[in-house]
Length: 491
Image (cartoon, rainbow, N blue to C red; front, side, top):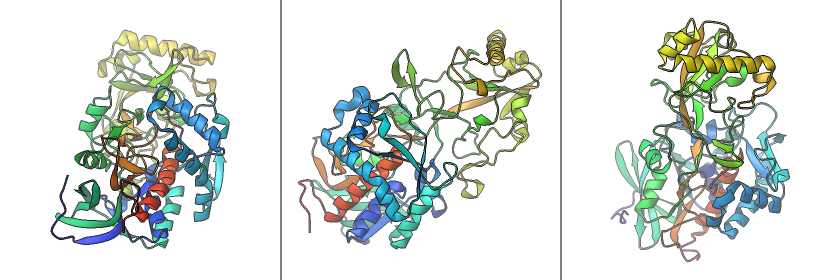
């Protein structure tokens, strides 16, 4: 806890911490309610947008409130008990309201087929929307939201890291931030909204809260280091869903790349993933959509967290190598943004860098990566037989994705676990207020987005973005009214 300073350097009615979809929505909503808003972002302007900007830019929209609630309950499964019914009610109503709200900002919704759990109750309500025609990603939704923020001329400060919340009794009075090496005290006359994302780039938090992952990397913003969680803990906030993550997915990370690299898997068929014992352990395919559901897998009839037998290698042949770039050379954040690596089309630059091992035979390849030669040869032989039969009895890859690994030279690339995002953080209530360990809301402190997300177990693609909008509006409205811990507006 930080006590109120003798002098405030700046002030606003509502201070929003973090400029992604949630922060933008909270800032716009508070502004439209008549509040003077200050939007703070620790990243430089070139990296603004965080995970929101580099996400798939898709929105989960339940077209029926009651069916949306049923689908949510099914996704939460055994972890539904910690989510109050009133919280679920607000989630469903606001999620349903997203489409009209986005259309009001200028979105042209285009539906794409993407129901991750079609057998779940309420699944018929699932609609996943893009902003306009075309492939997913590409900042198509971010550009709309950013333009809406700029149209309102909301005061936005980059390279301004909030490090403490200022608290007096049960009320949050403002924040302490660091800007250009100096500390700045900013008073929030009505409220503070934390929208500063998760902790996927904080190794200590990953180690403490997420089991089975000795080290992972983000595929999104490198600036998500759990700042909001630390600050909320300092003032006595309760935490929830800390072990729930979107991932791990398999990606590639080199020292010179700040974040993990998405894999471009659909361009070829003659490849497999193997663990340290040289055997396959999952269905290979596009991260988050094939083989698992955002890091969750169904084994023996039950959904659970994917576990990974590190180290993991991608094994492929010359046909696959020449079919196209293995890393996402056309990633959303390109080299100009400083966060992505421009992968070569033929993958030879990466071979020359030593990122990809190569050998004349599978046996020689096994020795390079310290894997049993007999095991790897046996795994490749079994996969090749399945590929020629057009059927994968071990992991169920479709006929169109299969081709034998038989044309030398052969290649192995070590893969790393990566997180799309984390879901945990300070617990929020139906008014988007952050709740203390005593179960009572902390006055004039709100949150939205991935920081303390409502998702406790399984996750539907586009759901975090939709939640950013839903609870961003709730937080912005209530912060603009100056809601205190008792629910009363403060003058």
